[in-house]
Length: 286
Ligand code: GUN
Image (tube, rainbow, N blue to C red; front, side, top):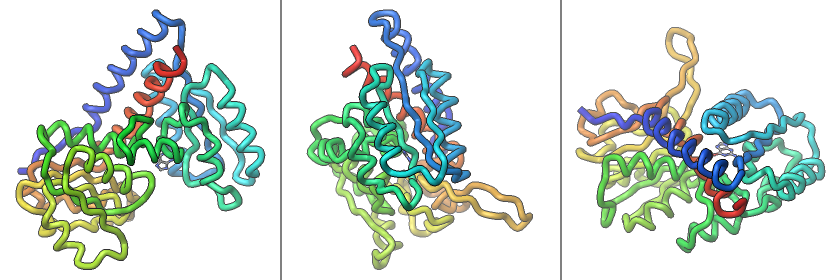
């Protein structure tokens, strides 16, 4: 049987470590790390994610500043809020939940965040730092994928890693992190030809396609480690909605280890967001 990599338990441990760092910052420097969470509109999935982020922040002792704005918010108003958060010493991290409504230029919004407070790691300065391996804040989901992989892989050097999906949020940054660990990395995407053959070469597979059940068991090499980033809402034959990943888990016994959905990458994204917030406070608030 493939081992299940328990993201919920690992995220819990990480959040406890973060809470200890928060307590230290507070007692030694009188600083309470603060996270501004900005949600524009009513997207149900985004609301759930934001609620979870705020709840977990509270558990770690990170103060959150919630800004829930209507769907018709205009760009200037949002840029004004970001400028205020940039200038606010109580705010060490700024998170703008994506996607944003169509009237807003997401790239301009992300550019406006102070890179030192960019706890999502989406600002071009942090993207550049990641690509050159020169520090900076790293996107949370890719960071979570690496922490999960580290629980089962000691030495990444020379391993063949295949990433499915080329998004700025997951695919591209996780590929860079794997490259930094000296894996041989292939990024695949919607136009990739002969995807199953490429996936079969992988020692490490990161599936971030957003396509329910895309990866079949016979695509996966025996002994491979599989990280399933997909969070897809589907309706079962009983008519009930449930969350499934990008990977079919049944029949995957030949993999060395696999993350479940839910309970794999999802909780790690939030744990890494809080760790990034404390890191930002340690670096620039003290
Ligand atoms: N939307 C989906 N994933 C993310 C994420 O990691 N951060 C933000 N800000 N928005 C998202």
